[in-house]
Structures are given as structure tokens and as C-alpha cells.
Length: 284
Length: 269
Image 1 (cartoon, rainbow over the protein chains, first blue to last red):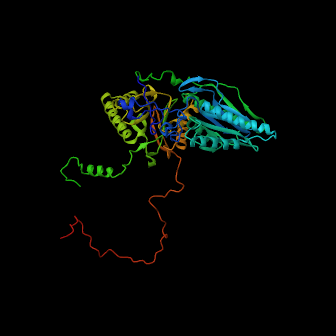
Image 2 (cartoon, rainbow over the protein chains, first blue to last red):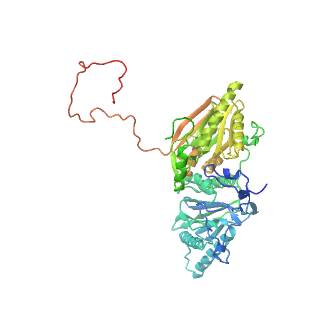
Image 3 (cartoon, chains in turn cyan, purple):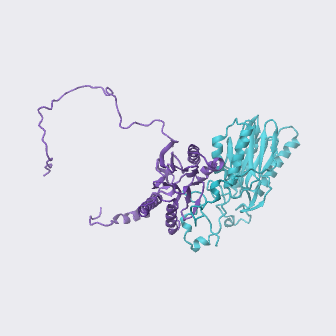
């Protein structure tokens, strides 16, 4: 079978190719493969100008290679929870199954990323430099999560302006002044703060659950249960994910703790999954 | 207008082409950017749908009906191009009725499913109809999804449309085997609500249809999610005394002659 690019009709929902692919003409078959993973949801094309056309010998980021999928985070009574899986995928291959996509900045803040892992490692380096400067000042003052959020927003936006983005969706979570803080920064510099933030597929899968159940004064058990439900649903319906998750907890009393990777119980044994074509023989 | 000789009148085609050349943009086909969902519970099937129909970025119909009748024991929710859905469901419903008269039996769901998939495959996806087909026949409750290219799935819970991922999040989190009727209705309504609140292509209200061996219960506008705070009553009833009476004159009709019979034509010469 020749590889065919799929389009996503907004009316019909995800995973359904539109009618223009029905006819196998060379204009369709010879179309160069468009990398669709982790394109910004706004639909914007970040690298609309081909640097080669500008006679610029430098290479700019055009596609992500090793990618992480969604990140989801919620505020609760004592602080914030940030959860994601530990997969670094190479296209659709599950290549690196033990990547930690949550970076521990300081005792008040964590940053988690979806998107290109190498760019996330670069961002972690930048944050490490800032933290090291703070340490050398030796005055006990650390960067607050809101400051980290602002800094990352400027970094992402400035890279976008040079048509060379850091291909990440970042989640900044922490506690400042006794209050939980959660923010998101996208690859083109889009940013917001809210009581629950999600990136990637979790925007559509986890956000409805968070909007229904998340409260700023949730207890820790309720928050953990909500996070487990959200991680489970994202694993069920996201092709590029694995059943191995990490949750980072940032509280005002205990600082940052990033859990060991764990797996969740999944249900694959619903009765009606057993013989789906029992009454539709010949179908699938 | 053209002559009244009968047949098709193509006078406006040239005018339309000229207008398009001058830069007129034709209105887009109505689509149902949608959330539709179906769920099998212990004794039957619950189908749910939102009620927003969009034409580009405008809401074309705030309260359209996306759960289409196929047979007394079979209903289909539709996502995709509104015209395609209406016609395909009408066509299959008619064919199913003829089939029912020919065989003398209650329709089976796989018959309807096969008719849909063979029609859609023949048109290679150009008929933009994505359906969630549910019903109850002699073999129990069934739920199928049918994609525009003609493939089908048989599932215990299914969602389609632009809000399908949002609704599926609810199903994946809260589905369990052997739910009873009220639990199933609550979960489907919750899934459609999730689509309405989190997807721009879905909106307005929630329709439900519960099909069991006793028949189908079509609950139109089961939940109003974006109801107006004040709705006018029709017809408007003003209580006597609302309008101040300034003058009153009573005419007695005893002296008026009433002529029975056909009205005369007005003389306009």
C-alpha cells in the first residue's frame, strides 16, 4: 500500500479522511508527507517561510523528531499535581520508554513538556543556568513559578519570531506565596494560567473531566483520583502513549516530589468487546 | 423568470457564474459539526446528540434534530454534511420499510447497517455521512458506527463528530457493563454535554433516544443547556384593561343585510 496522508475533517471528527483522498491521482499520492504530530492546535503554520528561500544557510526547526505527548495538571487544596507519561516517541515508534518529561526547577516549581524532547532538554539547561545563578547568590531567594512562566513565555515567543521555534508545549506548576500556580506556554508563545491546564491530546480528553470535577479546594485523594482518571482516558485514546506515568506534586509544605513511574489498571474486558461482530458477521 | 414551458430552468446559472467571477462567495453547505454518542445498557440502547448545525463559523440551526428515524426499533444519529445525512437516512428508512413489508418481520439492525455501508462505499466517501446506528431487534440491543467511506464498527459505546473526543473522554472514564436505564441516560447526557461545552461545533441542547424491546422513546430536547433566560409566550395574552379605553361606540347589526353566496369578482376595468 502506498503511504497516504490523512486529513482530518472538522465536521466528521478525528481520524476520518475527507473525500478528496478517494481518487488515487498522482497529485494526492505524490504529496510529500506532512508531519502532523504536535502541530499547534491553532492551525497556524509556524515555519511558513522556508529559510532556504531566504538564502539563509542556517537550519531551522521544521519538524519534531522525538516527541512527548500530552501533559495535564490541576490545582488542589495544598498545591498542584502535574501528570504525564514517560514516552519519547520517534514518529509512531515507542522508542524511549523511560524519559522523564517533568523537570524539577527548584523547591517551588516544576516544568513539564510535550513535544520535541531535545528542545525540552535545552529548556531544562536554560532553567538550570538560572537556578545555578540563584544558588550562587546564596540569598535563599528562588525563582517563583510565575517568574519561570514569564521567562519561558519570552523565550518561546522570541524563538518563534526568528522562525526557529522550540517545539514544545510547556506546563509550569508550583506554589508561590502559599498559593498554587499553574501556567501553560505553547510553541509560538501562547500562554495562560488557570486552575487546570492541559496540552496535546489531553486538551480534548482530559479538559472535560477537569472542567466537571476540578475544584481549587479539592482534597489530595480526590485530586489524585481525578488525575488517574485523566491519565487513563488519555492512554486509552492517544495512539502515541504508554501505560507508564509520573505525577509531580508541589505543595507549600513539602516542596516538590516527582513520583516513581507507575502503571494504572486498564479495563479491556467489557462484555461487548468480546465478540463485536457476533450479529454483524462479515463486518469488523 | 424563464418561460413556463416546464422542465428545468437554467437562466440563473449564467448569472451565478458572472457573480462568482466578480468575487461573490457562495454560502457553504450546512454541516453538523457535532457530538453524537451511543451506549448499550442492560436492556437496550441510548442514543444522544447535540442540536447545533453550522455553516462555516455561523450557527445555521440552533435546534436541529440529529437523531433520525430508520425503523420503529432503529434510530441513527448523524454527523457530517446535513443534506447527505437527511437523504441517506430517509433513503435507508424507505428501503427498510419496503423490506419490512416484503418479509413481514421486524427489521434487524444489521440490515440497516449493511444498506448504509454499501451505499456509502459505492460513493467512496463523497457522501459525507458519519453515523451512530443503534436499536433493538430479536437478537438484543446493537450499536454500530458507520464512517463516510463505508467501514463499520460494532461497539458497546461510541461517539462521532467534531466533539467525539470530548464525549469519548466521559465514556472511557465512567462506562461500566450492565448499567440500568437511568444510569445510561445520565452518562450519555453527560457525554453530549461534554461535547457541547468543550467543542465549538456542538451546542444548544441535548436530544436523547432510548430504544429497548418495548420500543423507542425519542426525548427531544431532553436537556436545555443554553436556554434563554426569558422566553416570550405565544400567543401574547394581554389582560383586559392593559390598553386604556378612550372612546366606545356600539353599532347594532340588526339593520345590516347579510348576503349568503359566492363572492362577486371585483370590477377592475
